[in-house]
Image 1: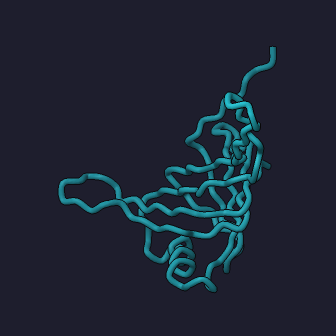
Image 2: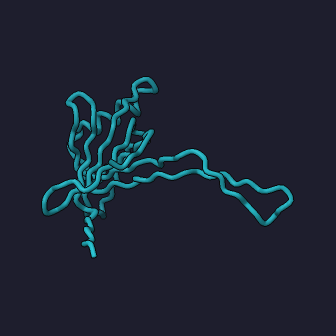
Image 3: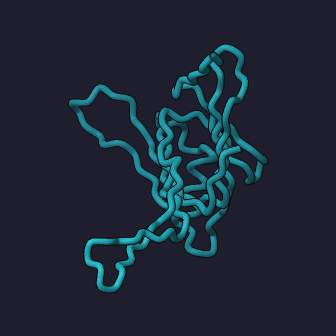
Length: 150
C-alpha cells in the first residue's frame, strides 16, 4: 500500500509576479478563495414536472483573500492596492499570483496554484479598539481571470 503524504496548510508562500522589481515574496497569515467551479443552469423538460436537468455553464473563480499582520505603510502590496483602487479604471495593474504549498521538512513544493491577471478590489484593516490586545491585520481581496493548479 502506498504511503499517504499529507501536507500541513500552515507552510506556504505567496509570490506576486510582475511589477517594478519583478516577483516579490509576500508573507501572509491566511489565504482563502482558491476555488474554481462551474456555474450550472437548470432546464426543465416540457411536460415532465419532476425532472430538472443541470447544464454546465461558465467556469467561475471567486475572489482570493489574503490576510497578514499590518506592516510598513510603504509595502509593495499596499502601493499596488492604492494605485489600482484609487487610481481609477485606467490605472489597474494586472499581476499574476503564485501560491506554493511547501513541505516543512525539505522546503520542496508539492503543489502550486497560479492566478492569472489578478487585481485588488478591496483593502481593509482590522478594527481598532482600546479593549483589544491583538495584532493589527490587513486584508486584501483580489479578483482574477483564471486559476490553475501547476
